[in-house]
Amino acid sequence: MIRSMMPLLAGLMVAACGTSANTVTTEDKVERVDLRHLVETDVAGNGIERYPLEGTVIPTPSDDQSRYELLRQRKTAAGTTIAILRQQRGDRFVYARTELDCDRNLFHVVGVADTRAHVETNVAHDGPLRSTSGLPLRQELSRFICQRAEV
Image (cartoon, rainbow, N blue to C red; front, top):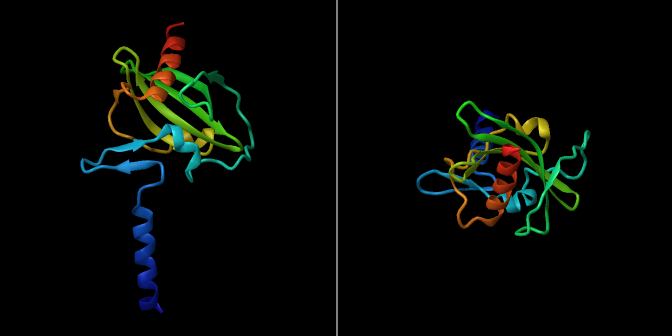
């Protein structure tokens, strides 16, 4: 019995170690979270939220298919900003915890989840803070969040 279970166990372990649909691992092991398509992945919720949250809508002309909301933002001791975002497209939604360096126009994702509570603890580190140049959606999100941080 145990011998017959070994291939199954090995297969489960390999599956658990795979990357999720929202990240790409490169040779230098830097993962990148695709915010634009995150709602299409298995991380996203199916439209059933126990406690629907309303945030401040972020204008995102580069992605007119989704609705992005800023739910919360705070400054860190290092001077960066942590922002909790919600993306919704149709009946699917997903939350992202991002970190921004407003002074240097740097951005990265540090967590993704299907609930607001889980996004605070789930990890989806997509590499170090890096420039938003050439990334219109990240530029729009950063601009909005950074302007609100100044107020």
